Image (tube, rainbow, N blue to C red):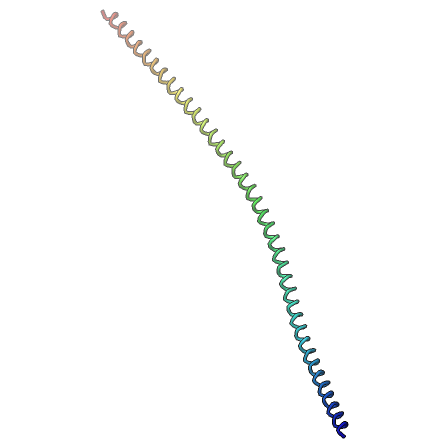
Length: 140
């Protein structure tokens, strides 16, 4: 009878052990599912972060390209502006030369006119003097 009781106790102990092992396996299975879900969520977040990082890199490359294009355009604009300023400076120099030439010509004409007027005045005075001399001689 002791053997039967021992066998029953052993059977009960084995049954309880099998039940505890089964519960432990179910708990381990649930724990592994939670870990798998957490790893899956982390993987999705990593994928989303990677995708956003790639988009950010592409946008950065695009912006960099646009900045380079704008810099090249502004260099061209500066070059064109410098050429325009050089043209204006050349025009101003040409106008200054024309003005100097015009002024010089006017001064020459004024001087020449003054000389001509001076000569004419001298001629008039000489004629008046000659006329007075003739009148004096004729009067006497």
